[in-house]
Length: 357
Image (cartoon, rainbow, N blue to C red; front, side, top):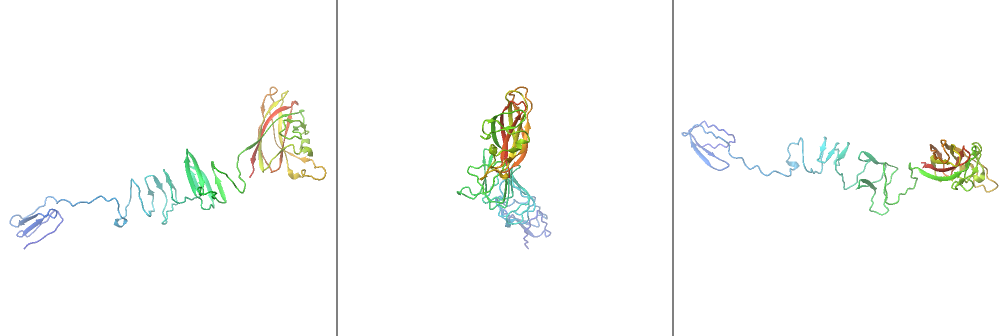
C-alpha cells in the first residue's frame, strides 16, 4: 500500500517500515523511492531552497496593512489625503505639535519649521511672528491675504491682492503694527495717523535784555532775527497786548510740547540765561473781533530752563528741558528770554513737538 505525505517539517517518522515511500522535492520535482527493507529511518539533513521573496515594494496600500504601525520613519516625503494622529507628527524638516480633530488639520499647539511654510491658499491668524519678534497683530480683519518677500534681509508684507489696481489692501477695526512699515505707494487713512515721532520748530535770533524783564519777538513774529520787545517781568509777561498776540508760533494740530533744546551765547558780559515758553489759547476770544478793539490775551508758562553761568562772554551754554505739556490745535507758543548780565545773547533753539492722539 502506497502512502503520500506532504509535510513542511524537517523530520518525518514512518512506523510502517515494510511500505514503499516516495519522497518528492517540491522545488525541483525530483523523486526518491525507498522501500522498508532498505532503511528503517529517513533523515532530511537540511530543508530545500526557499522560494523567491519577490521585489521590495515602493508603495504599500493602506488596505494591505493588517496591523497598525507603532513608529513610521521616513528619510523622504510622506504623502496622504489625511494623516490622523493623537500623538506627535514628525517630518524631516518640520516638527508639528498638536492633535488633528477633523479632515482639515487643526493643531492646537505650535507648528514650527526650519524651512519655508507655503500654501496655495490663504494663511490667516491673529499673530504673525518672525525671529521671535511680533510683526503684526490684528482683529476682525476681513479676508486678509499676506505675501512675504525677503529682500536682502528686509521683510516686506503686502496685504491684499497687490496685482489688482486700487485693491483694498486691508480692513479691520484694530490694526497694530510693531516694527518698520514700508510702502512703495501712498499710505492714506480716513482717520488720524499717529506716531511717537518728534517734530522740531527751529528758531535762531539775537535777544535783548536788561537783566530783569523778559524779551521776545516784536510784531514781526518769532522768525524775525531780533527779539527786542520788552514784555515785562514774570508777572506782567502773562498779559499779552492784543497787537502782539500774533507774534508766536501757531500749532495746527493737537500736540504735546515735548520740550526744547537751546544753545545760548551771551553777547558782552557772561551771565546765566533764562529760556522760557508760554502758551495762549484761541478759545479765549481775543481773535476775530469785528467791532472795536480786541482784549488782551492771557498766556501761561509752559516750561523754562536756566543755563549755567559762562566763564566768559560768548561761551556757548546748553539749556535743554523735557517737560511734556499738551497743546490744542490753533494754540500759540510764545518764546521769551532773560539774560542776567543785561547785555543780551545769541540764541539757537529747537522746540520739540509730538502729535497727540
